[in-house]
Length: 495
Image 1 (cartoon, one colour):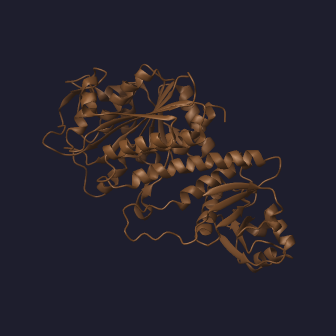
Image 2 (cartoon, helix red, strand yellow):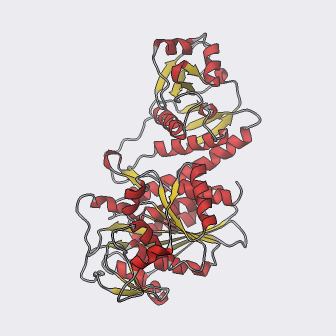
Image 3 (tube, one colour):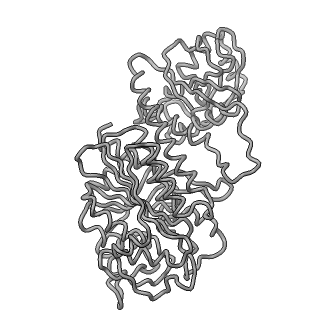
């Protein structure tokens, strides 16, 4: 997909299709008004007949209108005028992108950025349209033998601009495309089955990223290297698998001598629960337990594509969690890289066992900030559903910056407490810490566990178990929270 900005008169646009917004109760957007005037009231005639109501995401195709160069005009419902929400805008722009891609209109102009959305400027709407277009056009095909691509897919999408906002629109489209590409990379990795997307495969994809972008330097530690470092907690998880664990580091150097932001992504490429075996129903979705690592790889790709002036290091501890004669057993005690001992009460609470050593490993980078991203607890789904990512942090300024980034990008998070009151739930009679804290506040106690390994830096934890993938008929990885992470980094460099 290519994106461009045009300031030509709309009715004279030589495009396969022009998409304009209409609102409920027959209201026309400014561009729709211009086309209506050029076509001798044809749009109003359609509205008067009730052909389209203007509900957000509703579409109506008009063809060969007099006075308009484009052979197609697509009317896109945007909800109530003056009351269009972000959800309405996303519905409208996503519906437009899907329709255009399947319509044989390979070149199109979108005028949806003129839809008023409270507290959102036009550049945000351009960026969001590009992100929605990239994600709407994504199709998983790697393991399908009968996949048939679209015959004439959408190839070019333009945005109507003025001289005053043309530069802003161009930058917004560029940023949106990079974020969309990063999200789709994360989705593809998440959607791959566990027999393909192994820890070794993840390491190979990181190496390919470094080959494509010289600004990203990649290093992969093997199990022998991790044993020398004393990563007994991480390696205790991989013992039950025939797939060797990997510790993948991707170093993006765009910020000179500044301290890096370290993103730590949980990379459990399949989680059967170990000896504490998960129920069979829904276990196939545990291929998504590496979506934290996928989001880190996707974010590093977007960073490199945009060449942002910041230093970011992605750290991905990757393993499987399988039942085996050498697997962790409930009651085992392991020693982490930090020297703290851990009693394993539940082998299905393995994500924190690999993350804790990765967090300790991150100290060597003298980080400005460390953010871990993990499909860590089912409890966060009970608390927040699938709309918001759970956020906990040992620094309120960092938490506020991530909450702002979530609101700015509409990839939102919600802060949960990280109070000392919860730490006692992790007490153990046989080790320094237990790996689970009982049935109460499971997301919080999981973060409390990780917090014991983050004393030396500013740290935030993003629990994406509810937001990383969709289940049911629409099953598939979402690419979240690449948008949130990129917005945080964009805000940090003032872009």
